[in-house]
Structures are given as C-alpha cells and as structure tokens.
Image (cartoon, rainbow, N blue to C red):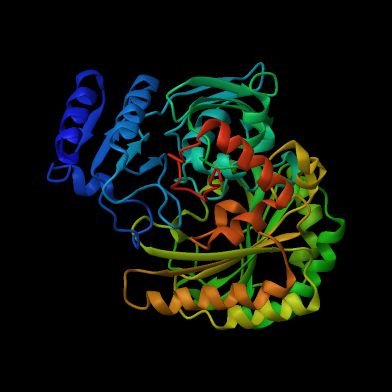
Length: 463
C-alpha cells in the first residue's frame, strides 16, 4: 500500500473521533492558520489539527505515529527559529486550549497550553496576583515555560519553571501523565527547562505571588552616545539593588509608538527598562540614582498597572515582521563586554532591530542548579541580538549583524538560555545545559521518546 493511501486511511480514522478542526492545504483557513509570529518562517504542514482537549491531542499523536511525519506543537507560535510549525507533517495546534482557573486562596493558577502570557496576567491580576512569565504578552505560555521562562519578576520570584507546581503531559505513545515533585519527579525535573522534548504538555499549574496591580516601572531613555558611561554606571549601581527590581538595558532606535515624541522617533538610544515589584515609594527611592545619572531624553518609569508594563514591548515584536536572534549569557559587564556591547549597538541600522541585555541574579541564582534542567543559573546577564525587518528586504544584513554580535561576545560567554537559541546546532544546545544536565536529559528522552517523535525543538536526541 502506498504512503498516500496509508495517510488517507489514517486521516479518515483521525477524523472519526476528532472534535476540533482538521485543516489541509487548499482549505479556506489553511494559509492563515499555517502562519506563525515570525514572518521569515514560511512552512506548509500537511495537516493542521486544531485540538480542543486532551482526547484530540491523543488522537493526533496516534495519527502522527502512524504516518511517520514530523510533528510540530504550537501554543503561541513565538519560536524564533520556527519550531512551532513544519513542512509536510502534522501541526498540533493547541491555540484553542484557553482554560485558566485561578485559586486566590491557595495562590495557584491552572492554565492550558494555548494560553498567552497576557491572557494569564489578565486573570491573575484580577486578584492582585502574578507568576513570572515573559516580556511580550502574545508569547505562548507553554513554550516559554518549558524552556525556563525569564521575565520582569524573575529576580524576586525566580523563573517561570521555579513557580511551576505540576503539568499534565501526553507522551509520544499517547500516555497521559501528571508530573510534579511528588509524581513522575524525574520527568518533572526535565520538563522544567528541557523544552518540548518529552511530550505535549496540555495544562500547567503555577504558584502565584502578590504583584501590583500598580507597579513602579517603565523605560528611562538616553542618547546612544552615552551608552559607555551609562553601562559602567549601571554595572556599579545594580551591585546593591534589591531583588524586587529587575532591569534590562536596551539599545535600539526609538520606535514610532504612543508616548514617544515625534522628534525622538528613529533616534538611536540606550534605555534602562525597570520594574519594581514592591511599594511604589520604595521603587522611587531605589531608582532615584539611575534617574540622576544624567539628563534623560525620556523618562517613562512611573507608577503604572502591571498589565501595562507586561505589554510595553509588544509594539516592538509585531506579528509578521521578519525576526532573527542570536543570544548568549555573560557572567558580568566587564569593561571588555561593555566595549563590545557599545560597538555592536552603534552598528544597528534597522528601525526595528533591538539589543536587550537582561539582568539575571537574585532569586534565579538561589535555586540549586540540580533542581531543574535550566542551565544558566549563575550567569549575570543575557544578551539578545534581535535583527528585525518588515520583510525580506534587508533581512540578510540584520541576520549578519546578529551573528557577528554574538560571535564578538563568544570569548566572554558563560552560557545561553535555550529559549533564545536559533537553529544553532547540537554544540550550542549542549552548552545551554552543560554536560551533566544534558546527559540526564538524554536518558529521559530515551525513556519517554525513544523514536524522537518530538524533534522540532532544541532537540535532545535519544542517542
């Protein structure tokens, strides 16, 4: 029997008990549903299975095993290298799994795999609660969590995975498992940082913390030519700041966005984005030295709703633009690292390209490295070099800028965050975890996905 005939029979059996939509090439909704956030990714799945629940996911996995094609799982579709889609195979679309249930007494939340960060914040902030999760509201909760989860609350409350209490997961064989510290503990260890290598997580349970609803947060902006002095001042200033404050230094050209005067739009700048998750008056006091560093072009660090701060970078990461990112961690902002950072920032020539440098430490570094599969607990900063264009024109130049920027920092690299990897090869995946963690993850892969069905990710092959 031909492969095509087998596929037809498998599809007929799948359709018999699948409650969601099965979308194929040629269907009216296909072209819209196949597209992901990163416009530079243009792939054409053989079938898009829009799952409505666990039973649909299980049926779709049965189909995938039978047909033997690649499987891509998509929550928010925010993967920079496009791992949330595929050519010819099965796209497991989880976007319809939107359930969120907040328990304000226990301070926990359960959220399904199609939830976006802004959707979770909206529900938890109704009770003045939050869990650390990302910097762009239309990011998918699932992919962000499985890789670790850095965000604006991380220095106070840790990574997203440090607040993960349990998951429901379907393995490659369709077995439904709950993983937590008390059940399938080794799988739970690996899921917290190991990405989608071990199964499809359909639901997450998180610990919540009192946050907001008003926080002291926002950007303070200076001309980019002040970057060398600012970065040296910033390095000394952050040595004594409390965990309640998380910051990022961002080099870019100011966008045309609400709140930015027309005369400043397009100007090369350096800014410090800050959020203080504590009393407003304490935030004002802690940030006062930074605000006094030098007269700023723009000071938007004010008391504002937490949900507003969570969305503040959304206009810089619009769906459909072309994105390419390189990233690495460094231990500290040494003079050499600062000089490289400034040199690479001055080479930015796209109005959309950006270079965030996230401050780590605090609660992240106090979790023992062996507790989760996250590999960069002891790094001081994460550098992102994000080349962005409206479309294909000029994209190669931005990609080259990002690659050259990361390579310039390579002698100072202390690690890399797996969610910020591109298709960089096995050596960089190994370096994201370190040898001991990688070997442990590989053993887990052999146990739960020996055929490597789930390989469209930062893959850990079983052998």
